[in-house]
Image (cartoon, rainbow, N blue to C red; front, side, top):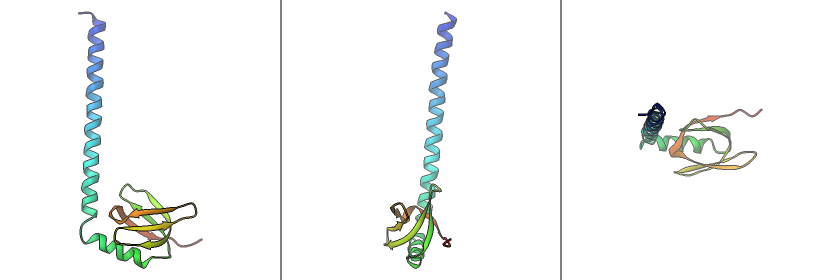
Length: 108
C-alpha cells in the first residue's frame, strides 16, 4: 500500500475520532447543565426567588443566571415565572427558573 494513502486514511480516522470526542464532551457538559438547572428549579427554590424579587421591585439589582451571565437594571415587575428588568439600554425578561442569584446594587 502506498504510504500517502495509508497516512491520509489515518488522518481521516483521527479527525473523525477527535470530532466524536468533542461531541461527547459537549453532550456531557450539556447534561451537567441540565442537572444543575433541574436542581436549581426545585419546588421550594422558585417561590424563594419569587419572594426575593418581589421585595426588590424598584431597586437596582444584578440578576445572575445559570450560565453565569449577569443582568443589571431595576426590577420593574415580577410574576411567578419571570421578572422584568429595566436597564439604561433595554428591557429584559428573565425566567425565574434560570435565576441563581439576585444582588442589590448600590447607586453610584
